[in-house]
Amino acid sequence: MQPQPILLYRRRWTLVFQVPFVLLMAVCLAFSLYWASVSNDRLLTALCLCAAFVSFCVGGTLGRSALEAYREQDPAVVIDATGITDLRQDDPHTVTWEAMERVHLADYEGVILVKLRPGHRDSALGVIVKALKRWQQRGDVVFALGGLAHDPRQIHTALKAFHAAAATRARAGL
Image (cartoon, rainbow, N blue to C red; front, side):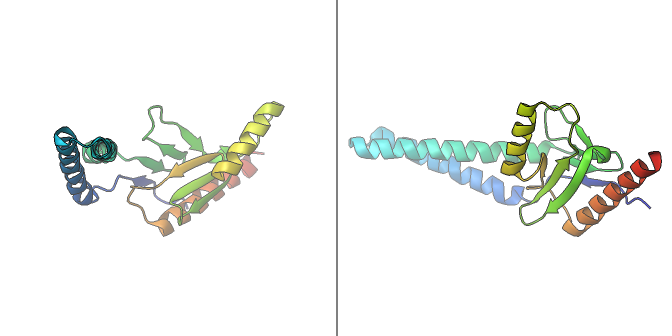
């Protein structure tokens, strides 16, 4: 029996922590720009401008992330009978269970690691590139779960069940 599909959404409660930090970064940016404009010391001006740049980068990145999390109502990752779909990408694609040789939840890293079945028409260079990518990321495809509300036990159980069901279908089809 197949488990229910799992829909993983962004954690919206983290906005409670992100928004005040973004506001703090905006205050630091304004404070740094103010001191850079009134300072007569070149070193202090340079340090204030560096602090303003860092505040802008951190605050802007975190602010954009918070805004996306607030606006996004659809699931970010879907695990169902067809495979695993990451909808956060500009071009979402599904990695089917039949294409997976191995799938593993590395919860301590917050990722789902997928090793794909070897392709039959891979060139020598393609094999080397895939091996290097697998060595670097620990998988051919990596689904990051950071910032998503999830239950590791439920995901682990669903991954095993869906992958086993696909293997059973593949054996029955042969």
